[in-house]
Length: 609
Image (cartoon, rainbow, N blue to C red):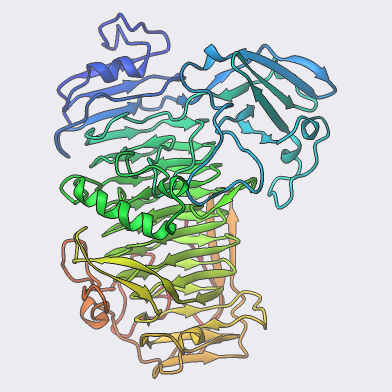
């Protein structure tokens, strides 16, 4: 690609320079001020501690502004500052006092985490954070818990949870105490978060940006409720056409990437008005966004790909309405919500509201608490070719959606694979190792849309059902006799369901109206999912599949979801034929259940990542 102009940034540069390769700028923000549509900003090796606030974007997908790390160079963008003026107070405990002027107009140690659906578990949490050698410490609500640290309950890192900190702020100063144990913070890399974000335009209308190849970390991001302005470490701010690719994103206090809402259509409106339920507030917010131009021409259509995202305490990626029409692919999202110090209804590896025509594909999502959470208005959404596992809540949660949404060719490996509080889903060629929870929701009327649009066609409660399950493979892992595996949970739902061509092993039970299926109740498939270095493998056995009457599933075969009266099709309205498996192997005329076409009755071992 040929760029109109290329600006260079270096830690050895000067903002009074011209921005050429031999005369680079010092800060990325200085280059942002110079760049116009079609330009590229190349950032060279080093650490940049700044909030990048781009004043303008590109004009189209072919006329972008590109922010990129120089090829082969390690470029860090951090929301933190180094602190090396700690004084030792007692064994392991150090203290620093900073004037509030150090923080400028934003002090994360005077800013409590708050927002609609946030649960602080009875204490105050601040957006700030303390880091030792790029690993965050655990904030405590009292100084005594820093001086006498205990292992935090439910933590995935017992030893790490005893590295603790506490803060106090008054009108002049902020004091932070931290227990670094045997480490001297003035000799190690000790940092504190000071910026609420790393890359975020402070106004909407900044479209068609590319952010490529950076290591972005340690911002004091605030709780990103769907009814609020959502500011993550990288945040699109209600814009269109961003590409966020090939980055390593870690250690956000709340969210790594946000593709969501702006402030003008409401900001934590339920906290400000408890006279009506939060779901009614969100309906009002949705109508306000429609009046504010929420449609495919103005909002969404982002691409988030090939990123590694970890150690964020709310979400890896979230977005309220602004993630519509987007593609989320080839990301490695892991270790989200690993501290478990606070809770709330917005925590997941990926958490989207109104994922209209959004494609979530080829991602690895593990150890995130909840893997993928599609809340309200998942319509035209497709979750395809993902591996989702080791999540202790569930792999995928569909909350009050009316469909049509597609789940195909995924490997779901947690104890709970699906929490279905929705209707109108289609599940094709997946591998399930856990249970599917089924629940209606009669207390909330939620929107459904005209096909491939944001315009609302109506609202309805959730009676559950109107689902399709075709050619899936159920391989329970250490099944609990008190749980229901397979599709028996759909035998009694408010709307009819459809199932055919599925294979059930061990305690997994078929849908009672299913005609063509395999059920091997006494066969242990011995499913295992193993990580080896950066690769992931599955192994399992099957039997009895010969003679199972299956067929290649198509858009026509799936029909239309009941309420939107919309088909299970591509975002552009063209039909889908499920003719390729997880490994991109062409399926036969009578395809094998599950995501892999070529499996044997004896043990199979397959590399999946």
